[in-house]
Length: 256
Image (cartoon, rainbow, N blue to C red; front, side, top):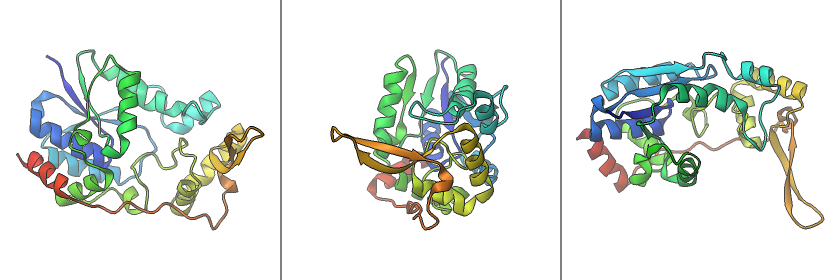
């Protein structure tokens, strides 16, 4: 019998997607799975426990057998991130997922309507996977899922309150945004300067410091080290939870 794997990331979007799928297909249709990467905010444990109570079922945890955290990957590969992506994603998220999944599984992703292109790309790159995106099906956006989690009586993860737009690792090296890294520096200086030090050691310029045109008029990104970001660099604006009539229908689906 095929499973429906509800991939839970300790973020609001995956939580709502999971709850919608549980209500539609039942808890017995498949597990809720969380991939630990070793660089999460400590508040994730609280949010995970709250979501287990909300879902009415336990969350299965899996992780890499080879690497403890992103730093272990970067030091081993001598590479952090670039146009081709970050090796920590493959080692800490992709590899454990491959070990866990079965060919007959249906994968439930928490992509929101804001991330339709990412979901389309996922289907394009992995056409062999059966995939479902309940948030996109209902046209739910990031602000909507934040409101739905709060409406369920669950406190949002701390990272959202600090202004981060998702609940990824503290200091995600795939981000090239100066505003993002300024926010990391503001709230997590220890992690920021540890990442900055290794990026210097490896010669990895993580952030886009400016854009300029070449002789053909084509715009190119000029990358720099994150510790070069000005002290007065503005940070991300937090996403405010917002609900509309689409939230009302989603709340009905989750309460069914």
